[in-house]
Length: 204
Ligand SMILES: Cc1cc2nc3c(=O)[nH]c(=O)nc-3n(C[C@H](O)[C@H](O)[C@H](O)COP(=O)(O)O)c2cc1C
Image (cartoon, rainbow, N blue to C red; front, side):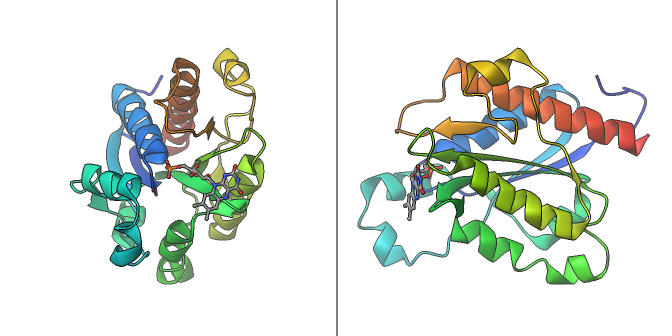
């Protein structure tokens, strides 16, 4: 557990979600992080798809409305935080371009060393159980290494990971429009608590 006498860990949860899966994953993480004593900013990245395209899909439009009140991530949020948890749909084996577009705004922070020594963990979802979750997570961890981040993947540090597909790189939901399973929720909560705990130790 985190040390109650130290300052709370500041966690930025940064996600993109077209249909709601990664939004739900981010919400589970936020709940777990707050329960672990962290100060949390739950942040979506800006949409980059044209509204005319979004309007052709009811499910995409519905998710846009559900997340209307969620703050949009800015570089200042990453400067504020000392821990980052990213969550993105898998797109052809990589992160959604909306997430990459946000990452591409971070050059200034990187150049001034403001992304260094932050902790970093990542989650994803894909339509298929072997649809590229691991490669997506690796692309995000590769980016975090360029920042000088301290990677905090879950590994096999909790039985919940085995029950939800056994991905040691990060929570990986098989997305079919269904609500998150209890197993997925437990894995996300564990990954988040571990990120908070490791960050708290570093902060001490
Ligand atoms: C352009 C595009 C590419 C995708 N590529 C993959 C893929 O490579 N493998 C896979 O299993 N699912 C793929 N999917 C399905 C998404 O991963 C799935 O819709 C997403 O995980 C749902 O997350 P969300 O509800 O947060 O949007 C793709 C979807 C889109 C729109």
